[in-house]
Image (cartoon, rainbow, N blue to C red; front, side):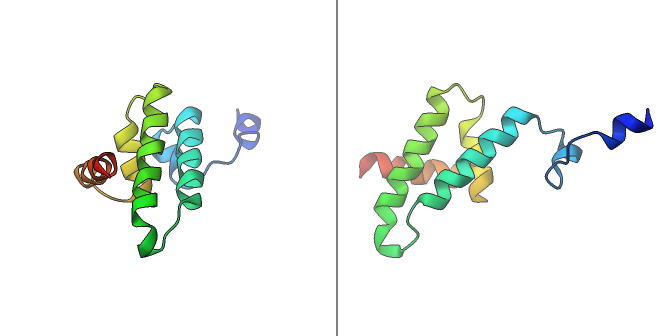
Length: 92
């Protein structure tokens, strides 16, 4: 039993406590990487919004069970605020 514990793969902090599975970890990391590639300058706000919309649409197309929750969680914003941003991107 003890040898089983020693052979476990390390996890990101908090993942074990949250019961996060491998798919969720990979999806979250992929979203983090995509967000990091988006421009952050104020003058690029429209480009960033379109990028958020593309990420959401890709997650949705791949059948992610909760694309809004994932994207909002990575961004650190409430889902309803994300929805406002996505709607703005659709209009733009």
